[in-house]
Amino acid sequence: MERKQFIRTLSFLAFSGPMALISCKKDDIDLTSEIGTDTTIDSTCTVTPSETEGPFPTKSPASYVRSDIRKGDGLGVEMAALITIASVKNSCSPLAGALVDIWHCDVDGNYSQYGGTQMQPANCQSVNWFRGRQTTDSNGLVTFNTIFPGWYQSRATHIHVHIYDATGKSLLVTQIAFQDSLSIDVNTNGSKYGYTKGTSGYTYNSRDNVFGDGVEKQMSTVTGSMAEGLEMKVTLRVNT
Image (cartoon, rainbow, N blue to C red; front, side, top):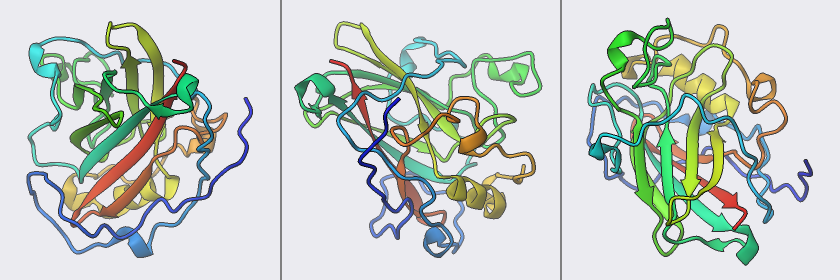
């Protein structure tokens, strides 16, 4: 897969404004001085790579359609996820009216709606946290209130995404990536937010079984700090 005309961008800058999220316990760690750029981002007008869908989402109950997908346990570094959908066949203009589903794990690496394994405890089956659906606005944008995801064995930090058109036709299944340095910092310095696993055994993007072939088209840009909250931005491009 061709990936050219890479545009290098900072993955972590000082976040200057307050975020419209419910506050939880804060600290004074500013990640700006600790996080650097470690992956280039390809912003060319080409389709975002497709990836495996699982752990699969569920379209019910009705509360799945929501922008605030937090678990409600006060754990995790707060993060606003701003996802823009662009149409490759229309010169990467914003795609309005698209349905965007996202889902990701909690600080411990567990998914809701799953059970029966060490990674996904049985008590997660009857809940649907960190899962949600929104419809893109005229700017092709959806926003979710969530947390910075945890991680689990063999995978780098990621968010699953499934994009549909207004009729429900599938347009793209993919995943959003995060800079390795950011993931390491949060899991090293974020114990008061619930990130207690540390980084022993963490899988870097280059060795991830999904991202190992390159993450430039799926890499997010994150600003802010653990103390003030994070803002993640990414543009995903669909073949429509």
